[in-house]
Image (cartoon, rainbow, N blue to C red; front, side):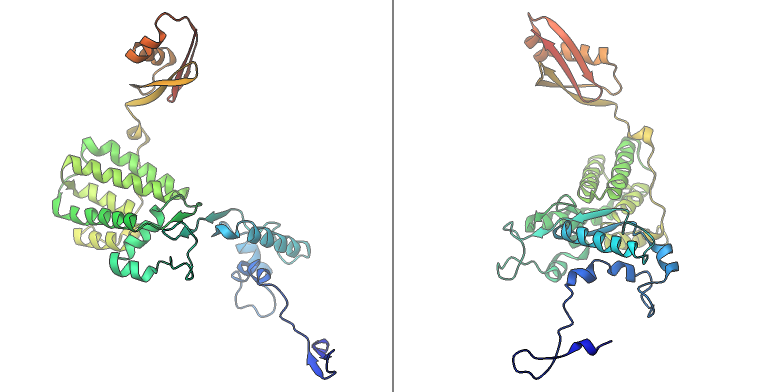
Length: 330
């Protein structure tokens, strides 16, 4: 099988060996996940039973720089393996996402030559692992590139400090009525955002909740419990420490995720834009669930809108529920 490796040098005529390492590294990175199904198999890439059980991959996530090349190559290789009967599925994964790249503070790709590399060990040493973890999720949209910001990471540390300091003002009791809507809306927001990889807006929602809690004064034991549960995926170390300190029992990671009540998430009032001939002229607050006639009547009653419509003939009235009112006049 290896006789073909032995050859003669075309220059000196002496004995030589052919180069065998000619396969690009893309080849191995295009199917390595198949080997995870059966890593100790020395007879085949993976057994049929293992491939039938594990494939296709439910969710494959990779760097944005691999979105086109790796995505293309991995699908090509998998389809080839499928055609020759090695794998049981025609596609390698059911879902594919790409995460953005963290750039240097100057907005350029981090590299030693540019001198803009941020060492994670230094950040952890100065601010803690939870701050580092939270900032990486808060830095921006999951799929987009974002520049590093030293000011923003300090902001994440201040937020966690606020969470830590709340233990000094804990009082017995359930979630207070004036905070019930804020808590249920935050539970819904964080739950949905985690599922959709919108970690930055989930953290922003918890920051807003902390402001609501601060305005109410103190925090009840149940409010603190729910807050720690929501924060745990983002800052596991501090939340586990506080959970134990508060005597809730067990570990945060073993607890059931909070459940929200859809009815308690509904807004009593909403803000809608008012357009006249397609241009936004005002914004008004109306009761949530208002019907078209009531919403349009509220818009016409607004001082700014009434002045703009004075002396004009209304041709058409449009209400896009919960979003905008457009009045066509001439």
